[in-house]
Length: 406
Image (cartoon, rainbow, N blue to C red; front, side, top):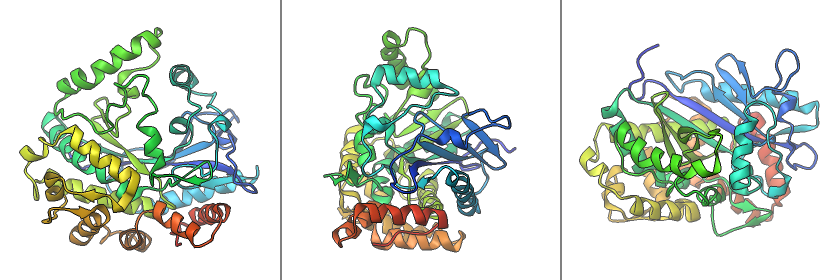
């Protein structure tokens, strides 16, 4: 395997909820398919290039690349095949996979924690934070892992990610409904996520990572306070700072990568991979300092990026962007523009799906032209489609790797 330099590898994780085929209510039955050869429930089942796994709650199943991949090519189809196989196995139990980042009418008390491998870690989180809350038990996301080789590469990658992070909800929001109702936010998953560890604020910070650009500074500024705040609540030391860090992008120095965590999962793997290609293309450009020098990338404050993040969580593509460095980073020469136009400009300029599959190119065209999945869900509802009908269509669509249209 080649050394883990910038963009040498990609790690991708897709999370889906398991729901009753007839009622679409959540069902805590991930352990019906996550079983070893002896029939014992386990947290991970390796299936070649894709591994099935579970984290925290029993109605969520995660599909992830088993090892870092050198290219995203073919991953949309590979994940789609795995989704179909999970659905085939779940069908025997009267359940199926459903996409989007939040169940539209689930109540937090319906959540059941995973009780098998690593359950002591989940029990510790539950004891401290009470995981019967939407920000813990009702959220499905996409994680993107990007490597770095040393402090110099970490500096470049972390600076670029900090600038892109606040705009990601404007590209990927898919959670407009909470307990059956639309709210003032298009990305409710992130609205809950940013407050789910408020009891120990060092864990999540402001979601936007602090402006730290070396391993030693990261350990001092981010890991140190997390360890300090956890200590009185975790005397057995079950929880580690590196795993408890809940920012929107987290450094994993144990595997020399940064994991981006603020992307809502889309309606199908083709859409998820199209989004990831777009994000990666923009990060490559930033790391190369094509639009904005590194010195300027590093100066943007957490406060200004957090303000922009909160705006895109609420309004998605309609959020107004006027932060000069962010506009320049995205290649815009305007003094202000809405976030969807900003992403459309990136997609037009960088053409991230040019070498992708036809399904990914189609997915990216839909997102660029018609906006986030959250906005398309609300358009379908405004046109008279019931919530049940919308999410039944979404559950059908993910099994066919199909886009959602209002």
